[in-house]
Image (cartoon, rainbow, N blue to C red; front, side, top):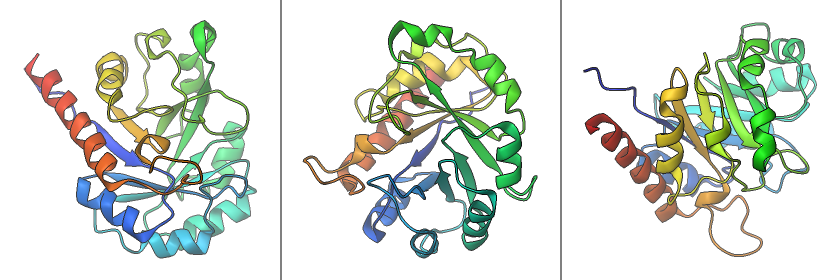
Length: 232
């Protein structure tokens, strides 16, 4: 029996050199930088480029945009070697294509899944088809504003089969990431996970400040879920 692909891991909302280093040391596959000024985790394109310059080969930088104008997105993406865009606002398929340079840069598109039982009404199959040029569809909770707000939607309500690479986000922590992997792994082409607030330092005012221990715990939990899935 062929083993399933391993779960790829992204640590998002990084603002400090130490946190970039901690994500790399823990074994993350990607790191995310928020280029949305209204976010408490926002960094400038210049700062994202400086932080991304610390990355070794094979760790991918991801730049998160919310309704950014295409020229601004392209300028930022051009600063960060190997960057992937993550469109997290109200971008249409055409706007995603324009802001990624019509194939010049790869991109992911965020799907904002309603909380509670309303999540069953979100047509993820159609959404993935509409954004078929996206490298992956990122699943986040639909809360006020943009971003999941550290909330988890009901993963079990997603369709049983989606012809896309999916990235599970929104409310993930070291304690629940294994459940997310278990529930969604078989429902898509491949599954990745994306965490931000779930690995931050406890306490008010610490958004964007990561806890290296929590990052290690998150990565270890995802890897353990992979091992359990392979042996089942």
